Image (cartoon, rainbow, N blue to C red; front, side, top):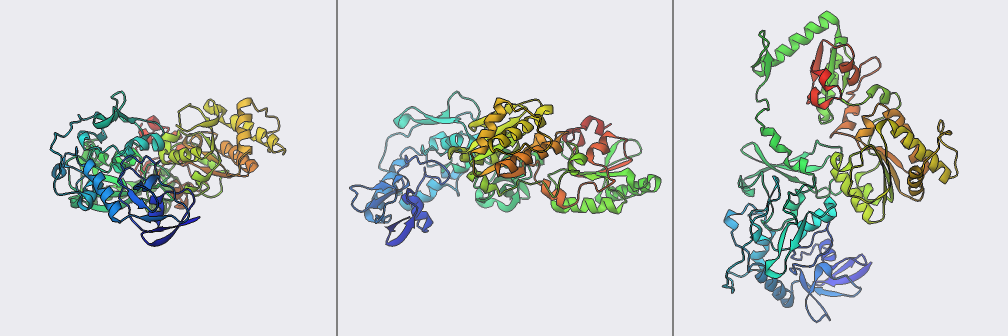
Length: 563
């Protein structure tokens, strides 16, 4: 730690940190545009110029490391003059179209221009014109003349999403932020470019021109799309959802959300979405009904089934996106009807997995600890598709030296450097993990796990084992593909053996937003009950309660489910 003085206040900061970080930790605000706490230093907007004693000129706070005894003035005449001069240059080519800009009311440039801008510009030359850029259906780049070239969007693509989709072309006043080959921005985290843009250059296309920020009501929510549970702010106008943005929660989603979290609200207003309860009439057709009539129809049907065939002829199916309360109530209702046929796991052999599990399968460590790992093995996961925010955390860990190894059936690019990889057919996943376990036991000079003594590891398995053996903070994680596999129980056993040999943590990258809640709520069959596979794949039951699921699409036995 070093000690410095900022605006007369004694401050301690970590050695190597930047002035702007030290100031913000002390509660002192320094104006800035290009700086972002989660991105690398660019130092190209110069708005954060401050006076440092003994320095001949103002220095950018975002790119000036702290030193012991440093004395800094952020509000001195010299600093204010430098910041005002920068603001004047930034506004030379800005169109000043705040009244028609969607960013109005939450624009960083607008806010700082009030404090550091002049009432009139000294520049009379024509402003530059930048043509709009096609960036796909999610990001609107219709007003790129507003861009101040902070390059935050470029760095989000390169550092957070994992590959560079945007970049800066040309030089001087001809500089433009654009896609290099005129294609859409397709990253699963692309919407975060909208959030970090400090002006109105990049906007949400579905939200564009629908409302102003001060017209919107805000409600906290949580993403249902994966097990991260990203914190969201749902913004509504007249009871209609118009925008979803991240709520910053450092231990969970930091300040990012995936595109499906951000834009899936559009599905709420799909034309094929039910608006009223529907009941099938005697003619076999569906008819609109009131809630009381629809619920009475359900009660009558369930009573009839229970009287004719007993409660065992009733089954309940749900999904991992259901809330804890919904799953608990469904389990209570099903068992009150005399049935233990309830399951929220519509893929995989739940009964076989239940035979070996103890407790609810979860990540096995706090989400934030993924950033601190130095070795990780991910089994059977399309990381970027299944858990884009966890893939992002592993991406940041890899920059610090973490070695990622993968065992999968499709060689999808995780956009993370991979230390070792075994891509095998699904039926060979168990063998692949067995090879790694045996190779790891050899590295640790320990006996092979029980039942695996005859396995001969290959070179790929040895490379992964060597990587895991060299780490101190290790995690072995099972993904969606592995959990849905018929051999999930054996896969979990082998993965647990690897974690134990490596001295690391073992966990699950579970599907849906509430897999753990499903187990805690008891929405799984008790002894004698049927799991989802047996409810749909065996002899059909006479009645099914379905919660938040479309069995044809959500179940592995979809075609059979709708017969």
